[in-house]
Image 1: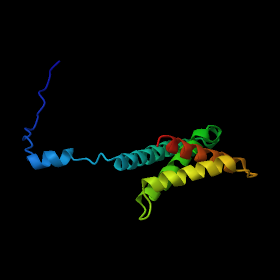
Image 2 (image 1 turned 180 degrees about the horizontal axis):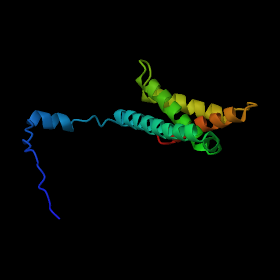
Image 3 (image 1 turned 180 degrees about the vertical axis):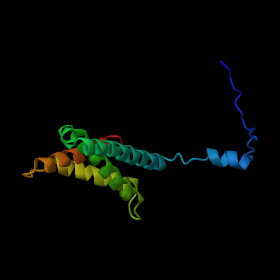
Image 4 (image 1 turned 60 degrees about the horizontal axis):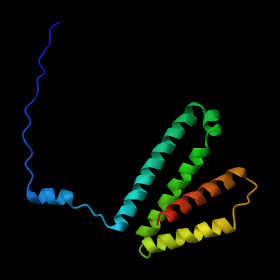
Length: 139
């Protein structure tokens, strides 16, 4: 059996100035930026999970609906993350406003749970409440 030698193109070393290295290391690590990055990550994660569920739904709708409980939870986390991020980034918003607003919604949801005649609506309300409670619990 013959072996062939791979042709490898020479690669010139990348020269980086001290300023480039410093700029690359300067990532905002403030508590607020960490919260924003966490929400952005949750949005990306939830969207990818829902895209996977959608693909399952397109191939086998009955199976996807039978096992759609996690889709409710993921959709609620996606919606809540978008909502919180919007509050934080609003002109008169911010982190403290977001925490206060989410806590108020959690208390309101606990005191006055959804009593719709639609089980699906009630399930989504439960998932939203759980997503908000989970976020505010970590604050």
